Image 1 (tube, rainbow, N blue to C red):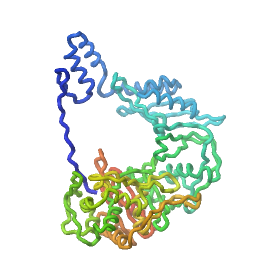
Image 2: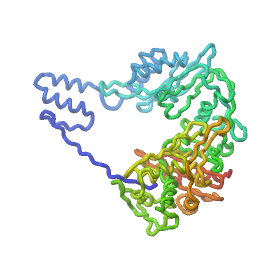
Image 3: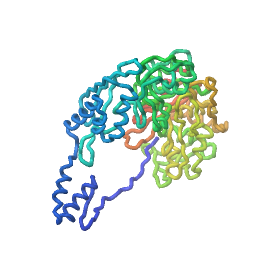
Length: 557
C-alpha cells in the first residue's frame, strides 16, 4: 500500500502565568512549576530554601550501573531466600509482586531456588532461574532464563524493579498464575493428515497450536491427566484467546489422539520459510475444502498466523474490489481514475511515490495497487458497505469461526469519513492475519467461502461458519482476472515468477505507527492451494512476504 500522509496538528508551547510568575513547562511539569513558585510567591516565609533543597535532593536522570546492579541484586537475593515482602518492596508494584512471588512457593511448589544474574545491558539485567518443583513426593528440576528492568521512581528518585509478571517467568502475563498439580486437561498427541506425530521439536512454531488442541480436545480425546507445572491464564489472557501452557511435566499423563489437517511436507516447508525472516507468519489452505495445510511463525511464542490482529494493507483491496464491481463502481477493463492524490474526510491520501495512472483501467490500478483508485469511490459508498461485504461474502468479522484452536477471525468495523476511506485500502480500523487473508484468496479461487479448519468438524460435531451469499459469476470472473493479471504483470509478478497453473495474487504494505518500515503482506492462490503471509516491519509485500508464499505454492498440493 502506498503512503498515507496527514498534516499533523502543531501545538505551540505557551507560557503559563501563575500568581505573577511565568512558568514555561517543558518536562516534569509538577517539579518545574513548584520550583518556580517556591522561589517567588513563597520566598518571604523562609521556606523557599528548604523546598528547593528537597527538590534538588531527588535523584534524576539515567540510572547508574551501580544503581541497576544493586537493585537487581537486592531483589534477586530476597526472592531467592523466600523473603517475599523484602523482594516486593524493591519493585514499583509491591502488591502485585507479593501475590505472584507468594504463589511461586505455595501454588507452583518451587523450592531450592538459585537466581544467577547475568551481565547488565543498560537498565536491564538478565538472570537464570534454577530450582526444584516438588508435588506429592515427585520432584523435577526447573531451569529457565528471565530478565528484569530497573527504573527510577519519579516521586523520590529511588531505583526499583519495573514489575511485570514476566519477571517471574517470561510466559506470564497480567493476571496469569503458576500452578503445579494434577493437570485439569489431559495431554493430547496431535497427528498430521498422514498420521505422523506433530511435535515442537520437529515443527518449532507449532507450540501455541498444540496448546490450543490440548485445551479444546484434551478432555474428550481419551487421555488421562498427569502432574505438571503450568501457566493458568487469567481474564486478560483468556480474552486474547491464549491457552494454558505446560512448563514442566512431573509425571506423564496418558495422551489422547487428535488428527489434524496439516500436511507434513507443507508444514516443514513453511517452517523453513519463516525461519529465514524475522517476525514472519504464513498459512496455507486447500480452497476446495477449507483444510489448513500449514501454519508457521518465526516467533514461536505467539501464533500471529491465527491470532494476529494487524492492518492488512492493500491485500484488503481484494475484498474492496469485489464490492466496487458488484455496485457498478468499477469494472476490470473499463477506465478508472488513479490520481496522485485524493482528499476524503479531510485526509489527503496518495499513492506510493505519488504515482498516477492516466487513462488507465481498474485492472491497471489493482495490479499496481493504486490507493486513490479505491478511495476516490468512498463518497459513493455507505459507511457499512465494506463491513457487509467482508461478512456476507468472505465470512470475516463475525467472530464465529470454529477452526479447532483459538483464532482471530478478522475485524472490519463500520467507520465513517477518512477512516472509512482508509479501510478500503486495508488501513483504518481493519485488522486481519494470514489465516484470514489466505481464506480471502481461497474464496476467490473456489467462488464460495469455506471456513478454514485444522480439525475436521466430524471429530466433535461442531458447526463451521458460513457466508450468507456468494459473488455473482461476473464479479467473481473479474476478481480472478484482477488477481491473475497482478500475479503475471503487477506488483506480485516478481514473487510469482515460476508459479504455474491457475494462479492469482495481491500484494500489500501496511503502515504502522512508530514503525519505520511497513508490514509486508502477500495473498495468493494456485490451483487448489491458497496462502497468505506477513513479514512485520520489513517493507513492501512483494519483496518480503511474497517469496515465502510463492515458495509454498510451488510445492503443489
